[in-house]
Length: 113
Image (cartoon, rainbow, N blue to C red):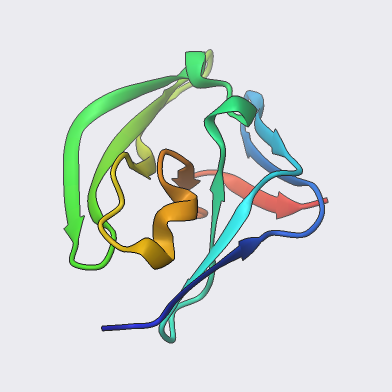
């Protein structure tokens, strides 16, 4: 099993679409798994959840469990499966990101400001 490390992501993080800011957070978490690049997870309280709609897409990770996906529904576009969330984390090492959302950097802009 790949080692999972979850730590607070230092600083202020944002997620932006062409329409504007979707997330602004000082409470983001960084999840590093094995040799993969760290992924930033955001607490729902910092996400404009009214602009996200759950899709039927799911994936399963043997270490974190089942991920549910969300589409962005904005003024200028709909972005399918832009974010995912593990509602119930299977591994204690990853429990800190349970219920948080992560976003695809290929679909939105994720940056530390």
